[in-house]
Image (cartoon, rainbow, N blue to C red):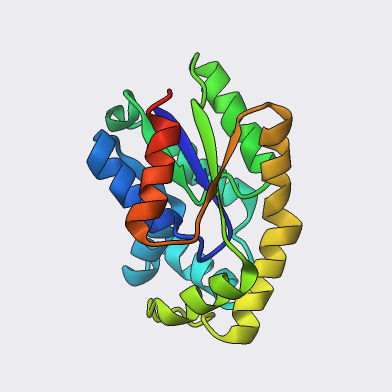
Length: 186
C-alpha cells in the first residue's frame, strides 16, 4: 500500500500517519521528520533547511526530491509506505511519478485532510513543537505559501483521479476511522 497523505500545515498528517503505520504496518516517510532530525543534529542539510524554514519558506524542490528518492530506495519501503509532507509542489509530484514509473510502481491512493483555516492556525499554535515560525503571522504566511505552491499538487492528482478528501475535523480517532474506510477499499 503506497499512500500520499496530504493537507495544509496543522491538518494532522503526522498524527494520522502514525496511526496508519501502526494499523497497517507500513513505514512512514516524513520529510518534516527527516528535516527536524537534520536540524537537531546540525547537519549541513539541517542548517540549510533551518534558515529556509525560519523565513517561513519551503525547501527547494531539488533538495527535497533528492532526499525522498534516496530514502525510498531503502528495502524497508518495498512493500509500501506512507508519504507525509511530500510532494509539496507539482515539480516534486512529477519527479515522484517519474521515479515510481522507472521502478515499475505507483501510488495507490492520495488522501487529503480538509480542515478550516482558523482551526489550522489554532492547532499549529497549540501543538508546542517550538518551531521559530509558530507565531500567528508566520503561520498565516505558511498557509499562504501552501495555497500558492502546494495546493496545485492536489489539482495535479485530482486530474489523475487519485484524490480522496477526508474531513480532518473531529477527534484523532474519528478522523482515523474515516481514513481507514478509504484504505480498506484498496
